[in-house]
Amino acid sequence: MSTGSEVMAARTYPFGDPDRLNLNPLYEQLRRSEPLTRVRLPYGEEAWLATRYDDVRMVLGDARFSRAASVGRDEPRTHPHQGESGMLAMDPPEHTRLRKLIAKAFTARRVETLRPRTQEIANQLLDDMERLGSPADLVEHFATPLPVTVICELLGVPFADRDRFQLWSEAIISTTSLTPQQIMEYLGNLHAYIAGLIAQRRVQETDDLLGAMVKARDEDEDRLTEAELVQLSAGLLAAGHETTVTQLPNFVYVLLTNPDRLAELRADPALIPAAVDELMRYIPLGTAAAFARYATEDVMLGDVLVRAGEPVLGALASANRDEKVFDHPDELDFHRESNPHIGFGHGPHHCVGAQLARMELQVALHTLITRFPKLELAVAEEQLPWKKGMLVRGLKELPVRW
Image 1 (cartoon, rainbow, N blue to C red):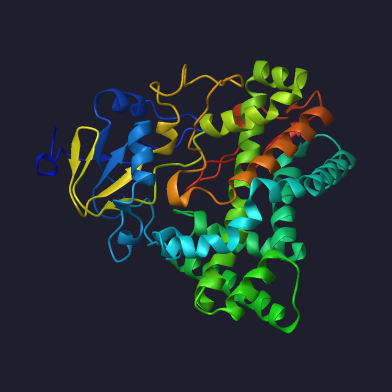
Image 2 (cartoon, one colour):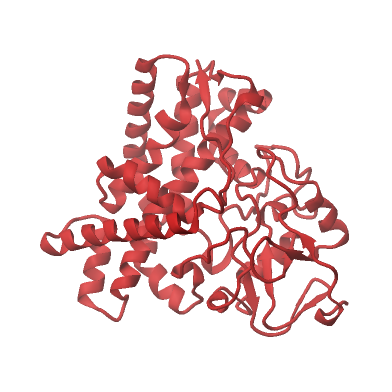
């Protein structure tokens, strides 16, 4: 056992610039020899980095590791600005109080009722893309408008405003792509925009999720404050499209560069639900571990004693490649008997929209590969442009032909 008093020298983290969707090999080395290691990020205090599956799940799910304790601390991070407060900086029961207000809209049963409409949207987008002609940018014409349209209809946000709120939403996932001043400006614009939609619903009720949240707030002010209503709604709008907009092109890129796996899906589309979860496991969406949890008391994590008050970062991408949990973890395998990945997180902060994202990704992949059986990259792989300065890895454009 080692203790916090035997603190090792901190490694610089992240372990280098992201290389497309490749996971840095140092994570594997650490899982084997130093699963809990000290790291120093560009900003904030030093932290522990957990790389093994069991340790990461514990950090995310054990009540002795707190997100609320990050408030007021110099949280370890990759960006100069401190993240805004809100649900992501809460613990139960405060976090549970807000989550309950929206959880019913994202149950598996409720999400399934949205599948036919999602299919209609996907069909229409590919009709439009086909009319434009090959080649086309899949990010612009399919991967972006599909989840944006779905979340707009669910929340009750005008799709016509997408260019504005998509721009402002970048503030939530930016590390260095925006200046701190731009981030504050964009968040202010997003919150003002949401406040305007809330005001409209107080004049005329609507049958959408935003309307339901406004009604919950107005009927019982103890359930959430006005500021919480605005923050929660803005977070749902941004998170409800940003990650899927990023992951869908990532999925297609991985399939187009792994033709055997793509051929497997084309031969048996019934594998698509399993493929979506396997791609969530396999693809390291984040550029680095983020959103540290602070130990509220001394806790043993593996054979290391984490002292009360110390922050721990959980490397989800590394956990999803843990050879003690996943056979041949660096291979893409759509036939895994068990796939307990944590691509959507774990514990109280497990992604509330996970079922919605799964459904959208299933519909998108099925529609795309059956509609365009000869789909392929329209440029050489090394010419594909990748996003920079963000919390997530993703393509700016994905030119394809069919």
